[in-house]
Amino acid sequence: MTSSRSFRELASFFEPEIIRKALSLAFAAWLSFAIASLLHVHNAYWAAMPVWVLTQASRGLVVERAVFRVVGTLIGAAIGFALVHVPAPPVVQLALLAGWMGLNAALTHLLRGVHGYGALLAGMTAAVVVIPALLTPTESLDIAIARVECTLIGVVVSTLVLAVLTPVSPLAEFYTQVRSVSADAVTYAARVLRDPAAAADAAEEARLIAQISQLDASARPLAAGSVEGYRRLGDIDLLIVGSLSTIAAAQALKDAGCRIDATLPEWLDRVAAQLRREPQAEVREAGWAEADDDVAIARLKIAVGQILDAADALAHGEPRPVSPATRIRLAPHREWALAGRTAALAAAASFGAGAVGLIWPLPAVELAALGVCIFVMVLGSLPLPQFVAPKLFAGVVTGVVAATFYRLVLQPQLASNAALLLSVVPFLVLGGFGRANPRTGIAAIDANMCFQLASQAGMPAIDDVGRILADSVALAVAAGLMAGLFVLLPLRPQRQAIDAATVIRRDLQRILESDAGDRLAWHARTSRAILRLTLHLGRAKTLGERWPAGLVATLNLGHALIDLRKRGMPENVRTLLGSMLQQKRTPRQTVTALDALASEIDDAGTQRQLARLSLTLDRAADLLTFGLAAPDSHRR
Figure 1 (tube, rainbow, N blue to C red):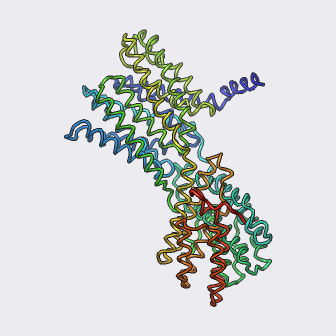
Figure 2 (figure 1 turned 135 degrees about the vertical axis):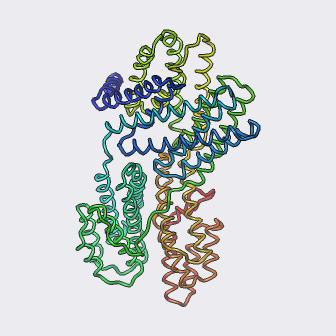
Figure 3 (figure 1 turned 60 degrees about the vertical axis):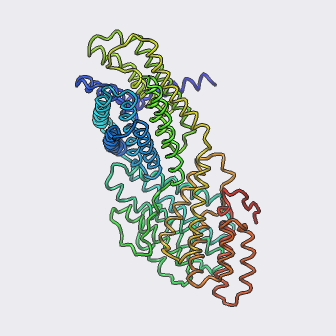
């Protein structure tokens, strides 16, 4: 069994698609290196490095990453050159570099899609300029300029090669998938209205929200490089918001015990069937023809209208007129807490490594400090660095071992440019196969880049074996330190999920303490927080048993609070809810107290709203206690 599996894994390296991609990567890296070498650019080996990170699944991502790599490189270089000319002691210049790297490390979690890649390069490039200038000032600025030139050569060449060989993004298939998931949400809403048991089906709700969350996470990478794709992101947002709102509104109707005409779920079934084919106006009109004054039914119809508006736009290429009530986008994806933690870690690591270099200004220490600055930025930008860190370390060690062999055995024998260019071909081809194969692709990025960095290909050979080994060990030590640090950090998805739940509770607190405010803006923020929480829970495989039930119930809870505030929230109700949101009482205790208060109120309208609030709060109890020290574990 083991030998058969090993044979299949070995055979996968020689699949036609793998061979084509591997050879194209090797050629792009070799051509970049060759151009830089023939132009006699110092440190020509840097030109081959961009190839290994620019390769992507779609042409748009290749082009857009190239653009942001160029922009980030130029900005980082400009900041780096400015920092080394600041009239201040080296330790102050180092502190300024640490601040710049911390800022850009934070931006990798605040800018969505490919945009954060530019921040990543801006931080790393500044370190490439500043660290050598501070630790070994002799000709360091000329070397930094040459490295920036090599990076630009590599980006241009690899983009031209890879863009031709990479397929376009499957946007049409993605839009069909989004409509299909929206149809599933509408079908689920119809089931909830027909069957009370469906409203309590937490597993089905979680499955749907997880699918919606994954589609949201995929939307911007798939749109990369496409003007039309970016124009349609608003339609994707509308479909996502509409799908979440449809599920929530159906549950609110069922929980409130509203009279539901049989034609309503039948209409939802027709809408779902049309979404799985192509949206048609007559289904929309059939649904809107039924009049009902109930606010929950109105919310349901608005949500379905959002889905139909967006589905029509995606299917026909022209947006339909959208009313102010349905003009909504998801709030921007901002991981503020994670950004702050990553910024602090990147700043501290880069300053600490640079300070060691100031104390011991040795070439190997300089290389280690530069490695720390690069690796902390790379790992800090990832959603799950704990899983990638061991692969990064393995890749770095592999690349360093190959580079050591190259410097000790091959480099001293090279007597011409032709021999130099031929000497790197086997390493680039092997690196291309490693990068092209999904099983080894992540580790191969660092193996290839560290081979280029440590091999010093194109530089004069040196006969100091100790210096060569010290350089190689320095890079491996830097990678080991950063990989070990990130492996020891707490698993981020759990912390990020708790952060998202905290945002939801904080927004509910704001509704309670201030005027009802902008309902659409609150809805957009809470929808985004639900998607973030779901995405992080999905990444944290071990948290499955802790998945909170009733995620979309928080949407209904917010609407219930806003409606009650507009009607006039009794002060004792406000105090009760505030106490719960401040974790002074559990949601289930609050439900019991709300039911008692409702029985003492004479106004029938307020009684109905308090009853809805109580039912919704009961459904949202798991989320409202998620991540707290002493959650309400009692379930009804």
